[in-house]
Each structure stands twice: as C-alpha cells, then as structure tokens.
Length: 173
Image (cartoon, rainbow, N blue to C red):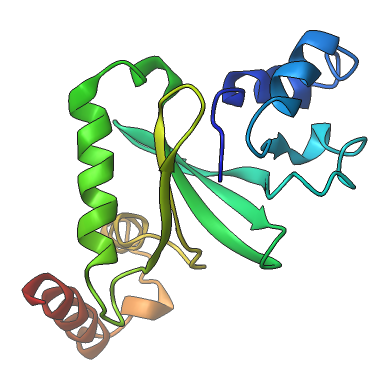
C-alpha cells in the first residue's frame, strides 16, 4: 500500500528545482501507490492512485524516520515510520522495525498507539502506519523540567506521578 522507493527523491522534489525532473517524477509515479512530498504533489494530487501524502517529518531516530502523512483513502492524518534509506540493507534494522510494529499491533491499550498497517516499499524498506498524536514527547517535557520550566503536563508532583503511572501501566501491559 505504500512504496518508499522514492523517499530520497522527495528531498530533491521538495526543493522545487527538480519538480520538472521527469526521472524523479517517473520514480514517484511508478510506486505502488506513489507517496509524494506535499510540496511536490501539486500536479499529481488528483491522481486516485496516490494514497499517502507526506506532509512533513515528525521525528527520527537511529533506525527510522516518522512522517506526518495524510491517508487520502481514509481522509485522516496518520504517522508513518520507515527505515532510513541508508539502512535499507541492514537486516537487523529491518527486523527491529517489523518486530516493533507487530508487538504494538498485538496490544490494545489506551497508552499504546495502535498500528494500522505494516508493509514494505518497493525498495524493500519496511514501514508501518500508526495513530498520529499531538503534543510533546516525554524527553522534551523532562528537559524543560530540568531547565526549571515546568510544563503544564507535569507541573505538580501529582501530575508527574500520574504520568509515570500511565507509563508503568503501558509497560506492565
């Protein structure tokens, strides 16, 4: 349902200078269905074969990137995690992402994001789609607290204990 084969091309397409590049457009159009960077998708946005439109990157880590994506079939925003292109050949990284998706998908808990889909792109990189959440990550909140700025979510001791109880509840599940 999602092809990651042209993800490297998105950076080129998004810059605007390569929007007319027939090779890059052909690579994107040959995906199944293609995934387009929003800035580069204007000419193809009416294509019914385009299911996922990447809005922006939400984050990245050692093994992958997470994108905010519009699922055009279901008309909702989701988060999509994919293995970094530079790690596409690393079997350990592939298997870690697949294992993460399968474990999360097997859990039904209010403090664990549901996984909607798991697949791999035309270039062999696995990806999974999950619920998109809003807000700041726990590490950002803790960094702010260390700097003396207590975010509203953890301003009081009761708030911090409540947050940790939710984390513990999810882990214990």
